Length: 281
Length: 295
Image 1 (cartoon, each protein chain N blue to C red):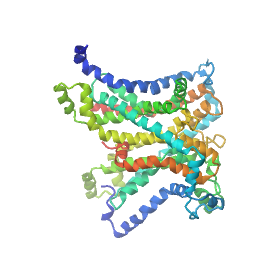
Image 2: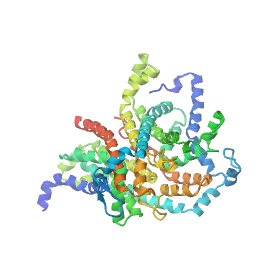
Image 3: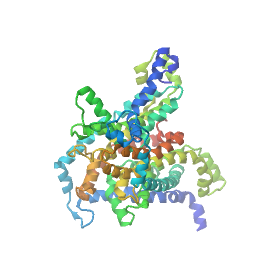
Image 4: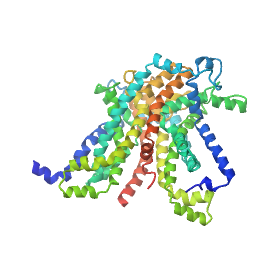
């Protein structure tokens, strides 16, 4: 193990570590803690210049204000309506593409695989004008579907990389044996491979949920009004209206951060397994 | 029909499985790349008739001061963003212990990566806010006068990059924590018996074993640096006086914002950004290709 376990070091070193650990964490999360505290600080505190002291009381009214005076609830709802179909769609498509690229040998296999991988890394700007144009002409501009369809297509790139590598690591003998028995390819996919994919599906679902929930660029390019805008775009436009109303900005930020954070804590193992794919050989 | 299917199932099945995903990916990703290249040779406002102007957009770019500024900022982003790699490694080493509650510590250190860049941008705007922001106050305490980072044309880019580094370091950290977890213990013990420790141990024994993690960390950091859009948009909208623009933001500005719907020029900027990124993507693909064909 590297570094040497702290238990094998001197008593002093252990004490220093025990103090340094929480201290480092507080420093690391300081901006976030500040915003969390500001989100429950009454507006009157800010007006009197009490920016850093304890709030004179815990003002949950900031959150109530945000919900009452802005379309925040609608934004949150929009985010869910865009994110959930995207997760389902891109996972479903990539289960099939990943299966095809992992199990079959054909000439274009590697080329297609690398096309998905490379496509996943291109800058969004090179897609922006044509995708916006297409969405407009399909009549899906400023709708959930316009946004979700693009996300499904784009995320298929990353998901295919993930699924293909996962299926490639499964024991191929299973598939061979089934073929000898005369099982059709569709049934092999459905009854043999799919049940083994649960961990991959879980890992990808949490990752894609977080990516799409946090997407800002496509939300600004493909939606314009609160009927369809997800929370990232909504928060950005509210930020323009709430000039220096930091207690409201903070409350809105915390609300936008909550769902992915909850997702991360509930599915931590899967999340990290998905993110660190390929970090070890 | 069914006899044909029986005989050729194995040959046809992959294409049927690929069809829906490939169709979606082609329509929304592959074809638009070429469309953008095509549009970049036109003068087009997005609504009316498009006029073919050849390479005029690219010629204009060479003398466009905003383009130059964005490009320089992109290089600054790229170089400074790579600091996330050593910083993430440092935190990973710091956290790679087995004391009580360490799992929770690791999760909380990872926190900034989970939240949206929009929220990160707002958090740092508050942190830098002139007059009462914590960062402003600290500078004021040591320096006498505070610095309004986001309003200073010379410093603004560095302020935004610092905000971007926060989640990026968290990401790199988690890659290295996973990597450290898989370092072969017998090699470490053997090196320890030979008297290796500290920096020497890190450099000669640990880092070579962390190479896959380092590779991915560099790839995601480079891509992240060139994709930087959210933070610039949220924190400064490219200002003050366009001094925090990067290519991705400048492209959006020319093509879609109030400065005018110049789709052709915007597409040309996107093509340049794409070309820069393709250099890195090709390197990545080339390495993956080698790994795949070696097996």
